[in-house]
Length: 144
Image (cartoon, rainbow, N blue to C red; front, side):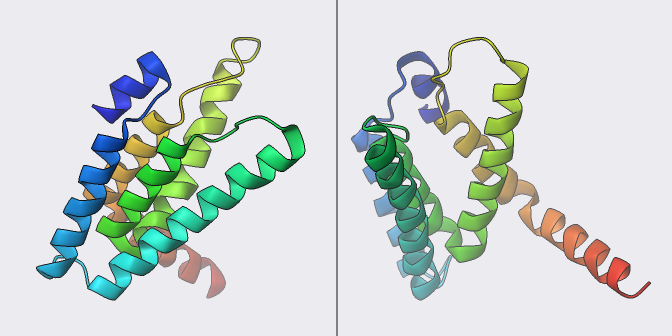
């Protein structure tokens, strides 16, 4: 839902984000993610995105990253912890840059949540595999 609503309306509804944050907390409380990791992941995701939004606002005096994106990355952190939130931020940034390169000359404002959603799903389904591949490749290159 968040993916498509943000594309159409450039909006992520609070009821969706708060539902995800509460669900992430409940999952942590039943042990799916260690509670400390969930809280730290949510805090780091929030802090990074809030800082980006604040710095952009101070420089440009306009919104560059919406509150819905900030809340969504907080929810991602609640589900995934530090590793997942950093992974999601990294890959959503890459997807956003690629999207802008493909759309050079078109509208400058774009919905960022689809990139966040795609990246968080990439982490949920393939994150461990991608991280293991990257670490193995890095270790291999260091031992050459």
